[in-house]
Structure formats: structure tokens, C-alpha cells
Image (cartoon, rainbow over all chains, first blue to last red; front, side, top):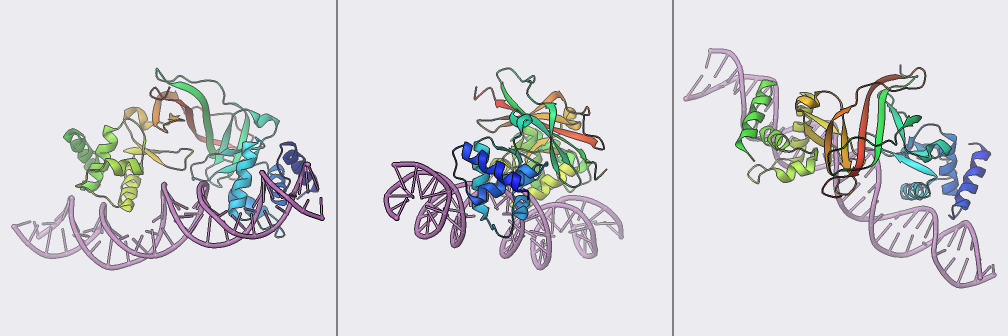
Length: 140
Length: 140
DNA sequence: TTGTAAATGCAACAAAGTTGCGTTTATTGT
DNA sequence: ACAATAAACGCAACTTTGTTGCATTTACAA
């Protein structure tokens, strides 16, 4: 884990008025270093042995980070949340891709997921959740 | 529960080479009578007291019905599968709408969810999962 | 340095869904 | 109508993900 990501993580956390704890730094640094959306468990595995985090703490830290819009949660059909850092492009809603073989999830930033869709009368549009499924480059 | 739906359910099950059991009839009849995609729990609640089904049996029956393409599963962000009967229009992939207030899910048949989307090089498109979120007519 | 709220860790819980296995039952053939 | 049999079923136990309550620790600021 690059020390850079840890520094950036620390600054981001502090800037959002949260306590800069080892757990939050470690989690956010992992997500900053990762280009895919990863699960709670994958985060746990990437944590250094020197920083064993309780499952609950991890969930709560992720919840806090999502609240502060530093990361976002991605739904999936396997009932497992995946988390991804909010880079500039991710501020708005966007689509995700999930590989049907290796279950890897990436963000598709160039897919505008913001326009409204035709709904039955009386329904009000808020947002869409779009997951494109297929095979990733590794599994093709 | 209309006797009609039970008859139709029975015929559908038989036609697909499955045993016509009380459980399967009850479940499929409920789904035939329902226009929304509902959860396993909602199905359980709608079952008559005279037909108490084990949770496992319910899951296995739903699995079988989905295998035979009589129903389809709908993913949701609350980690709970919802089930919906496959009418003619539902044979192909289509989008879903979920109310952010009452969590009700309906199918949007007129939203073509079949065209392929631009993916990174080396990725292969298979299908998309599209959920439009907002407020339903009741919650508006 | 110390007070305090925020963050953490532990234990216990909840809900969705799955697996193994013995029992029941819908169907098929006689 | 009846017996054989594979398909369904029901029960118990388990897994996984995620949540809640509460006591303890710790980052931070006064």
C-alpha cells in the first residue's frame, strides 16, 4: 500500500470533519488504490495484519465514508455491497459492469445514468441503477 | 385467490414436466395474480393457512419455476430477491421500477434492455440489469 | 494534560438463502 | 386399483451479510 494513498486518505477524512483513525485511513487508502468496486470482505483481506479491524468497525467506517460521499455503494445480484471511491467522475450517478464469471465490478463512467425514463402515469423518476453484465477482459 | 389462477398454474406446471403439487400451484397462482414483483416473504404471507409451506420448499419451488422460465428473479438493493411471473412480454430482458418509499417493484416492459452498451476493450456484453428508482403513484 | 464525543470492539442478533437427509407423495406402469 | 419410484417436501442445521446495544478506548481540542 503506497504511503501516498494513506496521506490522501488522511487529508480527505480530516477535510470532512471526521476523526483520522488508523482504520479509516487504511480502508480509504485501499479503496483509493483499487480501480474496481470491492466487497467488504475483499477490503478485509487487503488490510495489513498490523491493522486487524472488527467487521462492525469496517461496516461503520464504510457507512461513514459513503455518507460523506467519499465512496459509494454498488448493488449486485449476489446480495453483497461493493464499495468504490468517488473520484471526480463518480460524483454523479453512473453505470456499473459486472463480470458474470469472476464477479468483478467496475464503474462505467461514460454511461450517463441520469436522464429520466418513461414511467407509468403518476410515477416520479428519481434515479436509475444500471448494471451491464458480461465477461471482463480477463475472462473473455 | 381465484380458482382460475390455480387452474392456469396447474396447467403451466404440468406442461413443463413438473409434478403438480399443492405448493407449486399455490405459489404460481399467487404470482399470476400479482402484478408486482414480490419477495419470498410476501409470497409466504399470501399463502392460505391451509397450505403452510416450508421456507426451503418455497425457495426450491421458486428456483424450479425460474428454471422453467415461468417466473424470473429481480435483484434489488435490499439484498432480497423478488419474483415475477413471465408473461409474454417478460420473455425478453426488461427493466424494473422500484419505489424508494414503499419498496414496491414493477416491471417496465416497454424499456428495451437488450441493446449492447459501450464497454472497455476486451469486454464482452451479455445483458443489462436496469432498475429505475423513484416514487410510485401511491407514494407520490 | 485532561475532558469529551467520536470511534472501536465484542457479543448477540436478524434475515436471506443453502445443504443434507430422511419422509412423503404425484405419477407411471401394470 | 395398486405398487414402485423418482420427484417434492420438511426439518434441522448452517453460512453469509449485515445490524444493534453497550462498554471501552482514543483522537482531538480546550
